[in-house]
Image (cartoon, rainbow, N blue to C red; front, top):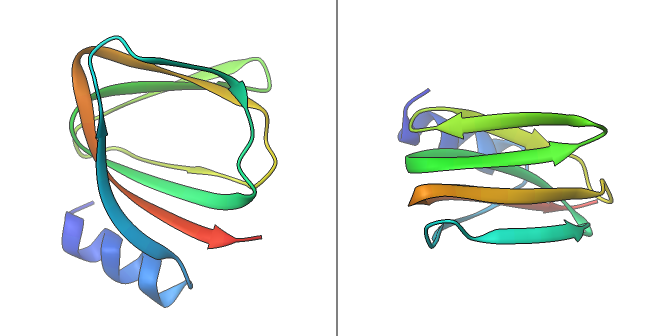
Length: 89
């Protein structure tokens, strides 16, 4: 999916949109968000593990995670840049 389409869908679905990044090899230990999240990777790589499964996203991949889902994140060796959507649950 391209960025413009992704952002348009976020806005249509009531998400706030922001661009962000995380540094190479960054890890976020188990945590939850009090919001629904969607992510479109612009460059680099991020893996999200939840419910015993890991999903790895690279440039062009998108991902969704429901609020209050316990998960952890691992960023690849080149860091990750992404567009994120947040919607209060």
